[in-house]
Amino acid sequence: MLKRFLEALKAAPVRRGPIPLPEALPWLVPKVRPRFVYEAQALRTGQPGPVFTPLAGIFAMSLVVDMPDVEIDVGAAELAAWNADFDRLLQKARTNLLARGGEEEFEKLGPGRFRSTWRDNLDGSRVLLPGVLQRLPLRGDPVVVLPNRDTLLVVGSEDPHGLDWALQGALEFLDQDPRSLNGCPLRLRNYQWEPFQPREATPLLGRIQKRRLHAEYGHQKALLDRRHGAQGKAITLAPFHVEKAVSGQASSFTIWSPAMGEAWLPEADQVRLAWEWGRERGRAWVPWAKVQRCLSHLLEPVGLFPERYRFKTTPRPEQLEALLSA
Image (cartoon, rainbow, N blue to C red; front, side):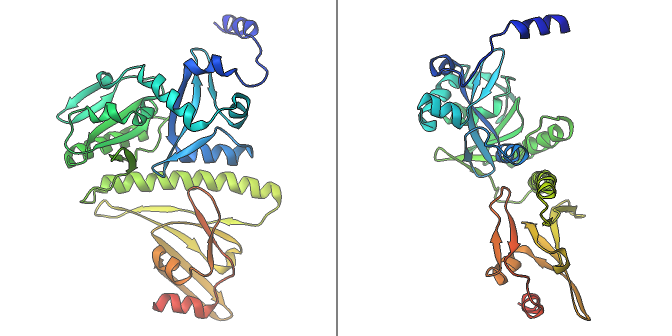
């Protein structure tokens, strides 16, 4: 088998430069992935990756030439060589994706509960075919969960039991599948996707949301620690911790102290402060929203995804006291 693979690889034509547009167009499809997948690629390589546009904040869509024997991500070099606009190519890509099947490709697993059956690594990309999803018999607006590349779960926004079913299934995929995405639900409202927040909070949703942030902040920290170490920069990437309460709700916290030097803080539920000025020492837990409100003149975003914040100047003891007494 290895010998046949090497012979096929040797016989394959060597391509120099971007694939020609006429050759690419019939195979062009959209690809939906968590936004952090694209952000992490740029952090890891230091080079721009595929051209993408955000989708509902936490996801992103790009273009890919999905040929039988190779998959080519469309980057700035391809767009420049084709003299083509991303949005116009996206329309063609959606048409190609729809040609691979519509609502008939969904398996009904119960009243108002559907799962995709394409299994072509592009199941999640069908969120870009809203007409297909709206033809499914659902209670309310379509709500989708994308636990991995080959699975798209669909329920209705007015079906809380269906949502719990989809979220529980997403958690099982996230535990078992190394190709898992993030499982955060999206709602289709007025042909626009948005993060779904049900009227009544559900512990399952909180767990999935915190799990996404824990994984993304952790990966981001590892990539930036490596980059800053190579550059000789002394920057502390504060950790993002997740705790599960007895009630089943998940909460998050980070840590900050002036002794950390320049620190980039993740956006967590709580900040554990620790400081020492001369003989004065203090520790306290403060909600992140309160830190942002009281110290907004000192905080600035770094420009990452997910976002981190740094202090332009170290808060003085009196500013920390004002924060605690606010």
